[in-house]
Amino acid sequence: MKPSDANLIARILDRDTDAFDMLYARYGEKIRLRLLRIVREESVAQDLAQEVFLRVWTRVEQWRGEGVFAGWLNRMATNLALNHLRSIRRRREHSLEIPKETYDWDDEEGIQVPGWMIDTVTLGADEMVVLQEQHEMIQNLLECLPEEQQEVIRLVVDAQVDIQSAADTLGIPEGTVKSRLYYAKKRLVKEWKDMEIKEEESG
Image 1 (tube, rainbow, N blue to C red):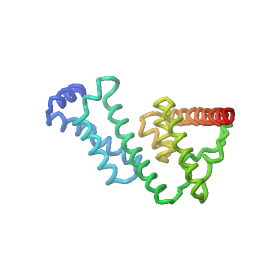
Image 2: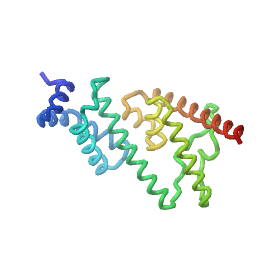
Image 3: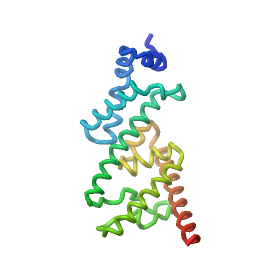
Image 4: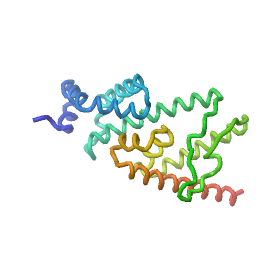
């Protein structure tokens, strides 16, 4: 009978390398494929997969037996992949190459999106500062969303993963991805408008 994840983790806490090898054999390829769907580059996916399992070896005590271990592992992999993609985007911004704004949301189903979220053209220095401030504000708003909505937004909007790939990555139906995305966008736009109103009133 194969040992459970909890049993292997208990042994890893005792620095049992055989248990670690068994856990890697169980999840290593699944994690690599998950990462590859997000970063779309084999060498990067392999490097990030190594980082995931390095953290398993050094930080496995952070999983306290709450929920399924595979879910904890998948969230760690997703976060590392998104951090990688964000670092690439920051390097592009610092090189003064302004990419198309990642928050490319349309007006479907009645969600009115602020103009700066839709399109970005060549900007001057002052406008670039404003754009960066807006980006930081939207990131702060993102952190107020439920975790499952944050995951969908960061995959579909930040990482520009398509709906099907996001569903595969999160292990949920496509319809659930679309639903979470819709309600996340709706809430973000509402929070943004409320913030603008407060600024106008305080000004």
